[in-house]
Image (cartoon, rainbow, N blue to C red):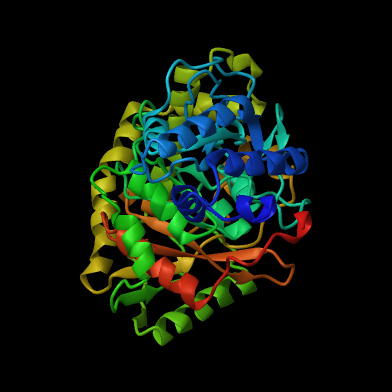
Length: 464
């Protein structure tokens, strides 16, 4: 197997090849690092590449396999870590020069990935304080979309998306507080899952964005994301990989909706609307009952989300940014706004979650899964969003993420699934939402779609 094919094989296949002795972990990691060396100067996906340690960890993985240790599901697999998550000995830079420098310990999710045998190859670029739906920074520049280098891969997990789409890792870790896994996954042709809240650990970043943000996988194949979930969720015991392998979620009742929550002002693109229709038709053909049904979005949902995000950004600046004077002006303004929010307003934004969740939960009395658009339109030009001021951020920050933030408030699992290309040759995704705790059902349904409408052989043309 040549190095390019090996780098693009994805976590599940890389793990299988290593376990079978067909390749070594070092060969997989070397192929990945070679691809990073070639493509990262163009994509700017990684803020930091940890090549020396990755090769040492690959050799250790090979030694473990040689000693008969084949119990680690990600043994030798190169994994990318979003740069809002701690990796011991490295700075958690959050897309800014205001950070505190190297941290002493791995975040819990990184500990679990390492325990599963993963090889951490680098930290991926994020917009400053993970605020933007594009990965543009003053400090580190802009990440680029492998399908069109003039476009952003999205945000805030844009570096992870660009790395994953280009085959610069076997699976990538992202985080999602208002669509930050699903948005860049939609724009780079990936399967990205925002898991049920508290299933994948966020420690030590507890209560991130006032409880909105979770960690989760981004992958070119559903099976790769499933392997990540098996490694990081307590008690999964291979359940997610089994769900992906079965590609059989059972006969489901699936609601389809393009209704926007009150307060959102989307302009749903023609190709994005058609992707929802085509996916609904495909699901009918697969034996599911598909019906039009809108969620009962609460009127205050959008306002509560903005309050929680602004206070969450203020919390992160206070906790993690010892040099706030180095922050971009927009970030300083939003953090100052978040600090000034009355305690009563923040309390309302949290306590209203119960009512918002209850209203949305009525949907699950009649259906099993909700299908919506993912991003409302295609990716912005690289660098454009980074120039937004405070007003533009508040007015436009979620204009293309319209159908995503509600499920951060409820804590339910939601995934972006590839659904073809637009007229410019850029990926389009759709969103699947499930009941709390039914992440494995979404994995199985996404795998079924992947089988019926394969996307894995599609390679980004801008880096071909």
